[in-house]
Image (cartoon, rainbow, N blue to C red; front, side, top):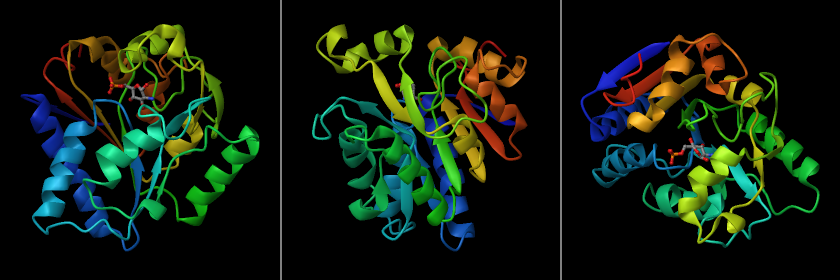
Length: 241
Ligand code: GLP
């Protein structure tokens, strides 16, 4: 694992965006792996600045988000389809037809999960997967004890995750209980993985990911086995290392 510690959260975004841009320049048909949450927002802001400056063109790039809530209308402002459209597709001037989010509203969730895996493969696999981390060590919505070989599937959200995400809804009852998420096996298939974390609330999860034993108790620790894993942290998120 390559661990880069930056003085502040904006620098985390700048360093990580530079890595993403480099992978996009190096690959003939790059495929972006997108994450939601607050952690990657600085990456998207720096990528948007490159697009604005004409240094980066993502208009023909395919992208796949990690996860989506189940039981939330796609048009709900906090559905990950809406969040990705607002924070990625529009500011990065990507083609909405090329930006994919798992279909958490599908009648047949298992079929939707299989179709999502197939679409990623048919696009050529993910070049660089952007990841945030949950305070419990989840990546995507792979909660503690998720199988390391899991593929896209429906999962129950951990209580801690629902509490962490309550801030986006008006009450805890409104926070969905289930999600459709890429599996840890799906994430590990990406050619590069790039995890970013900022703030002291992530320090324990980051320490378990980088220095702890590889254990499903901290799902992100599987990234120790990835050939090209980069972790970009601010000083607060690195404080447990
Ligand atoms: C969410 C997402 C994850 C994200 C994590 C951390 O629930 N499913 O992909 O990495 O929680 O979110 P944040 O970056 O807002 O702390």
